[in-house]
Image (tube, rainbow, N blue to C red; front, side, top):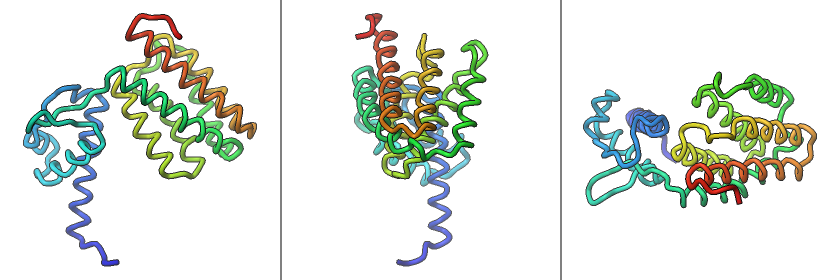
Length: 221
């Protein structure tokens, strides 16, 4: 295998920087669903040449964060039908991740996550960004503990798509979500793989039902 030339490494680094920057703009809502993507404007905004921007946009399109309409590149939002599909797949993947993590997550990591959850006593005092930060900490730590890199990557990508659908927390899910997270942690700490998987399924299903209710106004099914 040949060594990577310094120039190639730099180009890859700049492309990675551009990729992360644009993805964060999509996640934060700075770029919204259906917005036209201007390669030139992004290059000026990020202080990069158009080559890494172009490569980064190609990666984002391949991961379905962007879509084409003719020759125009647009931010690709998430509709209700897609979020329901995502939640169904997440339920399968994350239940397996919780099962694998049972008895394997370090006591220090469990204590850190639990402390952060217990500090979140009221939705009025917790920003949406911090809520997502703690949510990511729990879910991605569980995926990481199992040691399956592909599973971790898929869960991470699906969670990003979930956030694109609802950048704010789902109404009414603050307290139930926190208690469900604590139940997942307790089962993992106890080393009970089936209880951990079942707790994760209840959590994601509860979120799915809340999403449906918030969009359609229909009661949970």
